[in-house]
Amino acid sequence: MVDSLRVNRCKQGSRDALRRIYEKYRDSLLILAIALSHDVNVAEDAVHDVFVAFAKNFANFELTGSLKAYLSKCVANRVRDLMRKKQSQAFSLEKNCSASLDLSEPSRLIACNEELRLLSSALVMLPHEQREVIVLHIHGQMRFRLIAKSLGISVNTVKGRYRYGIRKLRSILNSEI
Amino acid sequence: MSSAEKIKKLFAKSGLTVNSKIDDRIINDAFTALDKSEKTQSVSPEQNIWRIIMKSRITKLATAAVIIIAVALSISFLEESVTPAYAIEQTIKALQNVTTVHVIGTDWDGNRYEAWNKINPKSGKSEWVCIDQTPHGYKIASTPNGSCVWDENVNIVRYSNKQIASNDFRYSQVFEQIAEKMVELNDGEQITIKTEKNPVYDKQIVVIHVVTNIQDYRIYVDPESKLPVRLYFDRAGNMKQIAKTIDEIHYNEPLPEGMFDFEVPAKWYRDWSSLDDPTKGLPIGDLTHEQGAIKMAREYWQAVIQNNWDYANQLRPVADWKTDYHRDRPTELIDIGQPRPERGCSGLVTPCIVRFADGKTQKVELVINYRKIAGQASCIIVATWGWPEILSG
Image 1 (cartoon, helix red, strand yellow):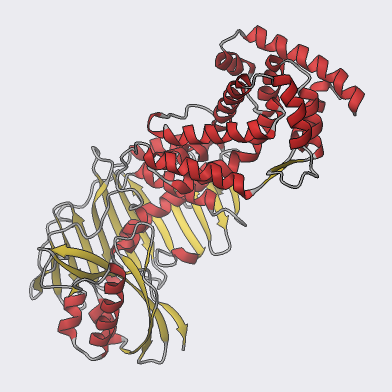
Image 2 (tube, rainbow over the protein chains, first blue to last red; image 1 turned 180 degrees about the vertical axis):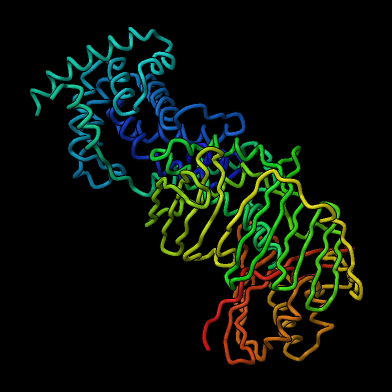
């Protein structure tokens, strides 16, 4: 309800309402983007692009469900697009990850805690499709049906990806924790 | 622990710190995009309930009831997890069926007042308002075609060709605004909701008790209609200018006949006042609204202190100030603060520190509007912003 009110205020041009939406969901969206991309730069760009697009298109925007789920979906889509643009994806991810997530790195703009680094390191070892479903379902709190709709695939496929992904993560985390 | 639970736990514990440069980049770019985006038209944005409260010292009582109702219901929205029956949609829907609101209550001086609101079903706006505040000697009726104030203190009926009680709000919009406001000011708030058997109504009534740093009030809501039936303030905080209690709230009852007839009682005087009258107000030349407001405040208080009532009346043509100041004379203007805009206020709120004959020092905040008539810029005092605040003495 509060989100719906703020969206309405944004439609009237309220910067304050937009700022409040950003402040409310910033961390959650960045965590989601980092978990998906394992790259703080991609995460920052994804959240940036989503908020800019969000602000740009208020006139036609109608909030029909959870704003968090909507923004999470947008960030996930944007992360996918940004990652596709990266040619040497796997290589750069490994490289960027170790540098960007290093808490001791002095010029960092986003500093992740230990849990996020561990999570991100484990998730990056999954295929993106499985990672996406796990992150959207667990962190984005999106139902399988909604994920399926947003990805344009069947619910069973989503559930399958989730199940396989979780199984893989189990072995990865067991060896790391 | 299952793998999924382990992942959930990791997500829950995940955190990050973000440099403000990132915030600046994202927010600034989003603001730029927002500014360029097409805005939807709102009905009197930012000018709803607060303007109504402060437009006039008299009219605020008329609208207080409606506003308080709005407060009551908005709180229930926030507590929807506790009382799902108070979902905002239900409340807004219930209010959309309200055509008239009649309230009876007491103000902070213990005086009784009565107010009626009639809502235009097409616009959803409360366009007709009548307040009877007999102990203070005022009655006001406001319609889209004009307004009328009966002032028993001086036996004058003042007419205006304007709707001096601005009631251009839709109920649902009011609730949305207050719900939002409550969310954003909810630090330290305590809201408890319970249902209790109420002997007055002889049935179960929902009691919403709200305690904040500055406010403490109870709202009694009929669980069947979802509409408030009573309201009581222990501490009003920044709502102190409104009612102490609303003891009765009646919805959708016919308004008394002749309420808006604007009759002049025998031996009473008739007077016209208009905020658009070019002979009223203070010409300010090239001064800004802010500079003009300060100049206006100074001249107004000097006029009052020097008993120059004609000039004071020119600067502040619509109000009950004259009788107030005959009873309680200002003797010295101590200071004028920085004029400021306020949410929903049509002018700049200009704080003035004034000493009165009884030795008390009060802060009186004038609402000073800017206008341009035939190319001439001028300022005019249209109201005070809430009751005066006693600072010392």
